[in-house]
Image 1: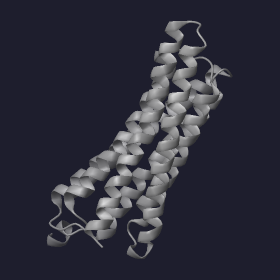
Image 2 (image 1 turned 90 degrees about the horizontal axis):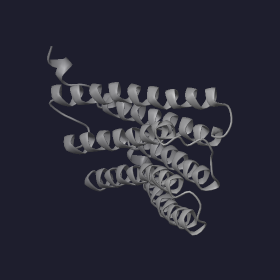
Image 3 (image 1 turned 30 degrees about the vertical axis):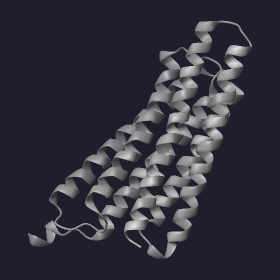
Image 4 (image 1 turned 90 degrees about the vertical axis):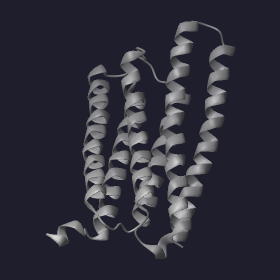
Length: 212
């Protein structure tokens, strides 16, 4: 019985990796969704469902992690930091879900170059976050992990510039103000995905510092 209360350190890292795998899957589905706008509506609906399914799958992983934290006497890294990183990953997926559901809520029927660029940056940030989470389990890969976190920060900086340019273009070119407002909110949600990736990267950097 006592051994059940002392999970192998690998279990924590495996759950974090599985959670970040869902992040990548959700981001890739969101990228395909944004690229599909203006095309087959059935494909768009299928991709929205795919993003939602990944978020639901990740919620189960989050619940498993919280249960593991509650029943464990020891953890491989600071208990609060594991919990924080789990919530950071959850925020990324929740926001990806918000992006997907905004397609129907705001009746966004066509893609834009800015939306596609933001979705691509989001998928890139999520992929690097996934790699950083996986590398976290191996102290010999600390520099690789740091480099991945720095890359996420650079992606966020680029995404912020794309967002500002996109919003400026919306209101500079005139046209339907209501349509512009809906697209603005859509762009903001897309950028928020990358913001949450950056927050997760900061948590990973703090873990590395505390365990160096």
